[in-house]
Amino acid sequence: QSRTCLICKAQITQLHLGIDACRACAVFYRRARRSKRVSQCKSKTGKCVEDSRVLECRRCRFDLMQGIFERANLDPYILISIDKSEPESSSGLNAESPKSVSSHEPASTHPHIPMISIRYSLILLCANSDPSSSSTPLLDRIRCGYNVMTRIRRTTELCMRPVDQFVHPNAIDDNTFPIIPGTHGSIFRTKQILISSLFDFASISFPEFENLTSNEKWHFVSGCNDLFNVIESNFRAQKIFPDDDRIFLSYTTTLSTDSIDVFLSDHTEKTNIEKATTAIRKGLETHARCEKQAMRRVSPTDEEFLVLLALSFWNTESPSGDEHLSLIASTSRAAIMKDLHSYYSNIGVSDYATRIGQLFCLMVASEKVTMSILEDLELLRLMDINQQPRF
Image 1 (cartoon, helix red, strand yellow):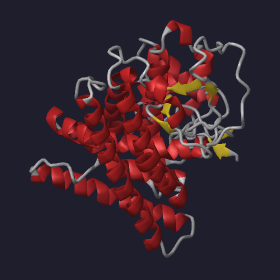
Image 2: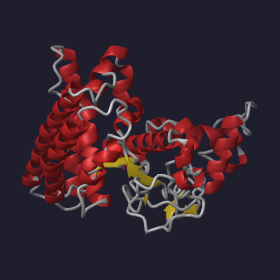
Image 3: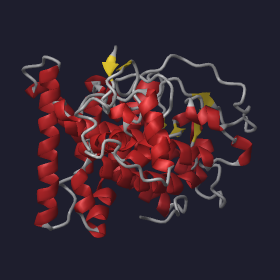
């Protein structure tokens, strides 16, 4: 679909830097950011944009783009780092066409660890509409925040893999990296990555988050990360592995009844392995399977999935006793629901009360599964299996 560059008004068919910008303007902005020279307005009036001379003045062209980023609450430093000069779809959470595993992908040196090339890519793009005219501005920011978050997690997790499981940077970039069964020993690091990236997600998605103190930020991040992970894991697993019992342990690793031995393979003491295997299998066959079935039954759209993640972040159930924090969470949740209503209106759904009820039932089911998983982890701790530090 043809669109118009917000800067020079040229016709474009793809996004650059997360906004409606042509490639030439995106290249100009990146170079201007790196340059130490301070340009002056060519007409010395600061009105080159109004006079339709924006391409003649470096200063006014730069200021126009900077203003667009500020109004959209986007961080240009992040967007410059993730921008590619390749065609991108304007929708979020796109199922890419199957890609063959590239020649730079190494063969597995661990025969007991099957290496599965990803076939469904959860790439979320920043909003492709003029922020001032969007009917769902908050949902647009959440989409952008989640996109940045997933890129951080994907790259960091894959770069942490040992040398014999090396993933080529091209495979990281084009989403042909292998998804492998996770191990007990990797949980702490991948959770650390998730929690750290949640700060970036929140800063981009919710401008008010930056006004909180360090302790207040930690209250929300620490209170949501487990539920956030369960919702995302099951949504992605349902999309990528609809026909088996695999769930995601992290963004790039999985767990299933067939890979429990791999999960426990780095437990050095080798004690209580049989009991731990039984406990993990029971958890997968009950809680994880039920959650995956619930996700399949409700089948959230991409936008509804983002809403679920955002609602899980502003968790009003976290025990704080602080009315100020409770008010922040409640206000943020109300704003999220307002955008959800606008989304339903945009797609022509008039009676959406039933659908919202289904989403909240899915949220409750996810909360129950989250509690069950935490209990299972404590059980493994009692068996001397899970001795990872707590956050």
